[in-house]
Length: 198
Length: 198
Image 1 (tube, chains in turn purple, brown):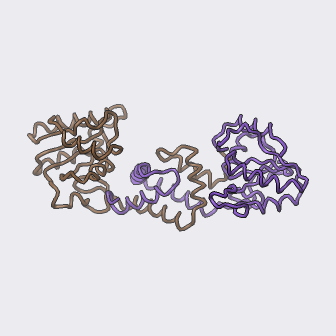
Image 2: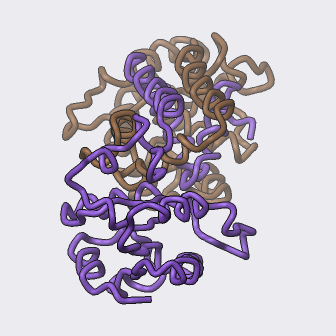
Image 3: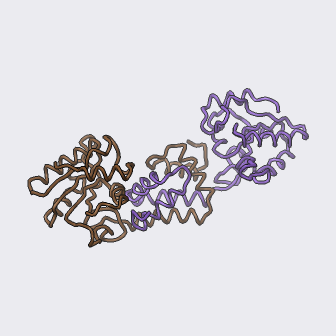
């Protein structure tokens, strides 16, 4: 579209490539950015570059964090023998928000999806197996209740069962097809309390 | 919200301050940006900074553009005696997209809104009056059909009438309360053809 000048078109193009931003939103955003005070624009671009540059994976649970070990894993008051497996950092944050889960996490960064060609080797499963060699009493699987999430849960369950470690799945209080990060805290807690043996 | 690490929180905060981006979208966007290849992140932030730095107002019609005079105003084949008044550059682009308007534009960058405290002095009206001193035969008012757009249209009409220059308003083919940039080209053209004397 050559409706706008070069710089504007370029910006609209880059914005429209982001997830959840359509061509109209990209146009609105572009003009908003062009009209924003220069120091605020700089703050935004700095925040993007700083985050991209400095955020890394926690060496224990693989969540995205600023330090080598994330605050949850670094907290000695958490129960390190209980590991909740989630698909991503946003899902971890959703459970942290309840303020009632006392164990630690393991972030897979994805779920098994034969359709999308994502296999067990493409998510952080090897790292989970490695952690189970330590002193672990329970693995709570809190992947989404989507097809991919359930497939991943089944896979992990089968993988861990032989080790004798307790494997549980958060209860079906989470609506089928629902995405963990959009669910209210009460439902998340109910799902945690009602977790069942797999 | 201290759910995420410093850099991530900072980024989410900056993103959530943009229009149309809620807290959940900001989180999704943040993690998308953190996981994007570094060169693509750089391209995005460069596009933002370049646009903010280089885009300026056209000296004639005040649309946002890369050069001193925008391509429409610089085009000798356009009818410079016919000026369409629009609220912003996106609305100009909407009419340009029809490919059938042969006049030039005047971009107000806003509309009169007593509720928001935006008066005639806060939009580019002085500049419009200045342009009318030249050889102008018709001013087509294409502000939105919102309360603010109609107020602005009335104001401009009353202001220009005494000069003897023809003042028209695009027809009510544009749905009441509608935003010009979201309307299909056929409706936009019909509105242009059906314009009436004010």
